[in-house]
Amino acid sequence: MVYLIGPTGSGKSSLLKLLYMDVKPEYGLVRVGPYQSDTTKAADIPFLRRSL
Image (cartoon, rainbow, N blue to C red; front, side, top):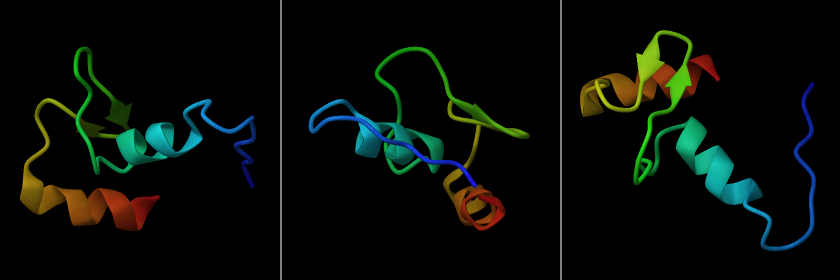
């Protein structure tokens, strides 16, 4: 089990949204297993979310 803790406004929700690709990063990329934010197609995102 993993815990993500921190004060209000520290970016916990933003980090989670980046991990399950609800939002795309303004620069750089996010890689989760075989999925990468700059190349993952919208049709593949549900498979990513199921694997989390």
